Image 1: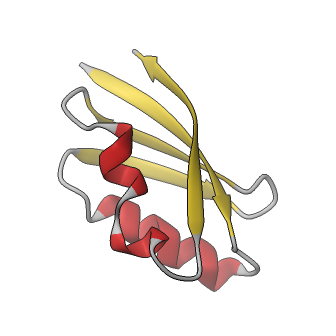
Image 2: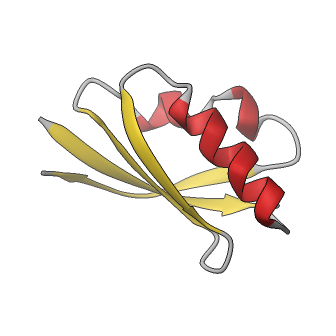
Length: 76
């Protein structure tokens, strides 16, 4: 089963930021796809049901310039 985890992402200011956050998310085990929006300041992560939101929030990409907050989790 796949689930969608929506994150609010703080600190993104340009397209390079979006790419950096997306690459960081896609590098996480169990993540199938990620859609990152600079305009909305969000990331939609499509992942295996084994992926915990806390795991995504603790990724290296969110330990420096960028911060993230959980908005929702939807099972598909």
